[in-house]
Length: 216
Image (tube, rainbow, N blue to C red; front, top):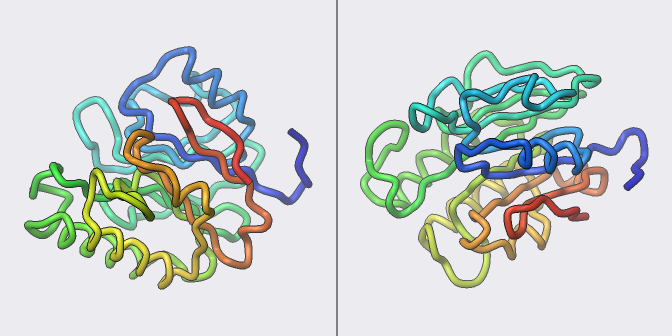
């Protein structure tokens, strides 16, 4: 699929700590400029995903995976943040725009690091408050495994947690494409939001049935 030169194609995928030649092929086939990835296996690097620079969250979700990572096509200039915006998130700057990938709390995530609070809403509010405190409003593309449906029935999170995420989206001046709002728990609640002024210039891809598909 062709696109104007200045149009960024952005994808988001929860890899669930898995990696195979099939994952590599699907990521490359999508021809994204930037991938907002979650649960990236620690062994995945430039050799496993040729043509991309990969910047990972410093904290690990478990021994075999990072919470989040961002893969940027290697002909683009990536400027990594010195500190992650939250332990379960990672951020970079590309062409003056900040891109952030995040895992947000879910019902059974526990109360240990990196979460703060006892309930899913308290943990979600703490995480989104940390993110909105450092991500530049109106100049951010934010996506990942938010673990909440943004409309309809709630499976993995809570309705109050959903509202905390929507409040963060509003605070950052983002729009969430309707396709992201409709994604449910069966596809890992992957969502992505772009700056209102830039959404027309971002192609969104997200997985359905375990495979990336084009979203506009």
